[in-house]
Amino acid sequence: MTWLPTTALFFVTWLAVFAQTQFRPLAGLLDTPVAVLPALMVYAALTHSLGTVIVLGLLAGVSLDALSPGPIGVSVLPLVCVGFGLHLRRHLILREQVYAQWWLGFGAGIAVPLATLVLLSIGSTRFIAGPFFMMQLLILGLLNGGVCPAVFRTFDAIQNAFDYQPVAQPSFRPDREIKRGRL
Image (cartoon, rainbow, N blue to C red; front, side):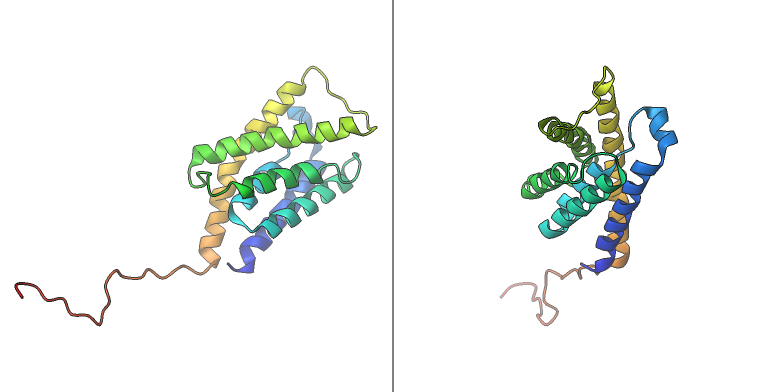
């Protein structure tokens, strides 16, 4: 694997963190922050090494917490746990199926905010969980579920464009002669 798909993943994650913390009109319209980091973690967990997944979760979580009013480090553990859990079971997951990508994005889009909420409730931080909290979780799940297949297609296209393609080996050896007929 070349370095370009991994670098593109880190760059898009950086842009997603910036968009999540700085684009308030869209967040105000939905009454929910536009958080697509769980979808990016799903892609990273199913396609990259464990080291890349952990570093991506650490950098994304710390960057998100540095730009948001929450305590530093509270977003790291949920992102890393989602990535680590999916990476451990990636051999069992139907990575190529769009419906599996959608459900993984949906689940991660709900699991990351819930885990962050649990971590905030353990600490002394006060949080606001009003009557529309379940609706916000549903919006985040649907958003990440819809974005996850697009993330897979985009990064797979980048990888196919810039990564080495395996050479197909023929099933026969060209130095052998095939004799047909009777012996």
